[in-house]
Amino acid sequence: METLESGLDCSSGSIGKELPEQRERYLQVKEDEKLIKQPVLEQDEMESMQYLIRDSAREDYAITVSWWESVKGDLGNTCSIWGAVKWIDQQGRRIKLVNDEEIKWVSMDRIINVKS
Image 1 (spheres, rainbow, N blue to C red):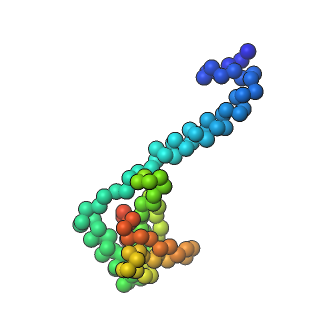
Image 2: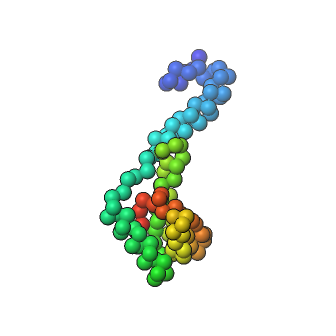
Image 3: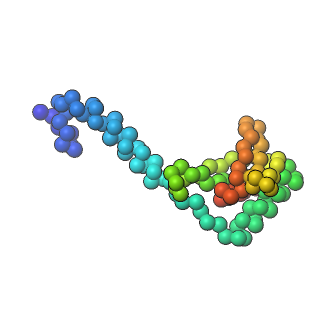
């Protein structure tokens, strides 16, 4: 009887049924390990980002905005988009970014980085 290094019996029919489920669980654990808590920003970082956002809206040039997006409770991942700020919604606390391919509204409370 042939066995794998893990000790599983290669001749049994159960190997084909268990491995896809085990692989799926393993991949899910690996994805979960990549999740992070929302970064806490210092006041000067927020002011610098707000300046770049306002300047992009005023001067119509593209910036790259990164934000945190919740996946599982207080854990999530970061997303980025580049584009010019076309609208700052003070009431809804969000900005509208536009580039050649898409239009995206991003919550100002979730923004973690802005680059010009």
